[in-house]
Length: 371
Image (cartoon, rainbow, N blue to C red):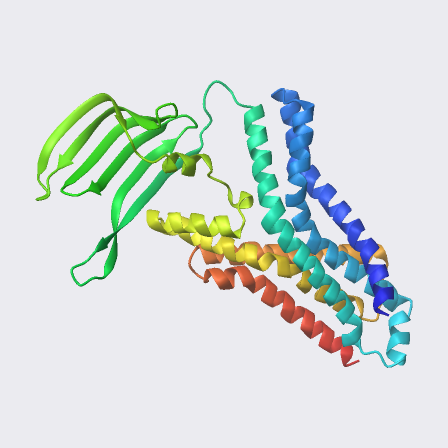
């Protein structure tokens, strides 16, 4: 029975992956790439490469939808042809019939996690970089705002304990791809001397491994917090770490980060102290963890709905799938927005749609089993 059900489910799942991926890609990427080919002169080979790199990211979202479609269509057909009735007549419970779909959905959950964590973020990031490099102009493209990078050092206290204190703080208003602009640097790395540097712009000098600062002022502060000296400059070179530039250059969108990279970004945002960005990233991380389990939820809901005695065709099953998918993503958007607004916790905001779907699936399954 398990082998028979699996052979019925797999072809429909693969069909769903192809269908949903094609539709989403056409809406999300294809038309935009074609417009860039026509209007911006994007080479066709580059457009094809970007299109293929976008494929894993879209497939991640097609896996849950395909799971729902496959389970709903398969169990609806078996129900309409009285095969499920025959199985129940042989002593097979509804729970045992649905177990096959849930186990297969669990495997798809693992596959979704691998794609969502290992393949899709890297491919999506490469697609963005490839497109930016192909369309780059003489003017640098805007990269990032509010680059914030702190460095700490350990200080041994009189009682022997160690305490972490700020050693250097690097802040820039923005990075345009070539230069940092609007810089403020607090340097407390040397004992007995603190420096505050304010500069209009700065650029990394790769040949000398130093920073070139332009049009700024250096304030030297004595240990008693009084000004010791003020130095104005048009050009000044300082040996500071390249890390802030690496941070700006490697800045990624949420869809281009895996969970580990998102957690690292969260630590940086916590140091920056922007509550809105911190909250949004916390919600996104929880959503990234919760999303693969949608496959199990959809597998349960689809198989439970399919086992309800009915006479439905494939068109009806497809329509029901679309309604369920729309309802889920609507609830996901609403709960995510409420979590970002602070009304719900990040955990509840991300997992609420899953809990709602699980409760719905178990309710339907129980009702069918009692008939």
